[in-house]
Amino acid sequence: MRNLLSYFAACSLIFLPSLVVAKENTLNNSNIEEIIKKSGLPTHKETILLETKSKQLFGKGNCTKAIPVLREFQKQSNALANIISAGINPFHRASHNARKAFRGSLSEMAEFEGTANDFKRRRNAAMVMEAECLVKTGRNNAAAVKFFNALRMISIKNLTLWKRAREGLYALIKY
Image 1 (cartoon, rainbow, N blue to C red):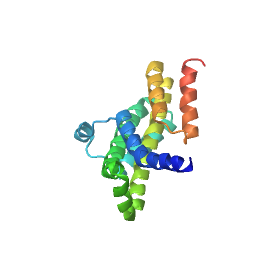
Image 2: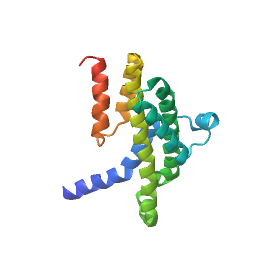
Image 3: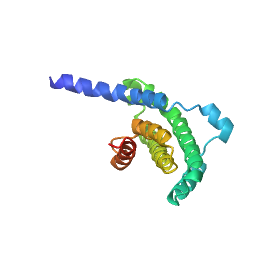
Image 4: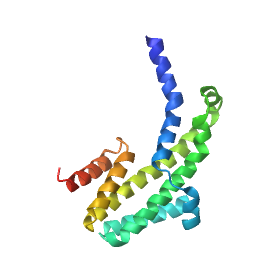
């Protein structure tokens, strides 16, 4: 029994990362080529500056100006996360034996994955901010959709954002 549990745990470590990558790409299937044509290749620095601007506008309560900046930040941060993830996808798709042989650079892969995940978390927060702005500007249907989509991507580890999005959505349905 113990060996069987070990086998299933090992299998989950082998297959789960690639399933998570596939799910994430399905949920966030942004068209990288379209974004690059429209806004240019997203860089780390430019994306952070865009986030700062969106947070400033949101913090001042200027939702009319914040919404388009929040949307652009979401696109840029999602594209940047997907570009970074593309660089580590071969590792996730590799067999268990190939991964074992690659161990010398695991810390580098973890750093890249951490950065990609950080941009996804930032994108999720911007989605919730946009939804809150949509509520403030009286666009409740659009806000409900944005809250719903954010909740599909928010990790259970981010309890504060999860609660904020959940309560925002429930307030719209008077729950």
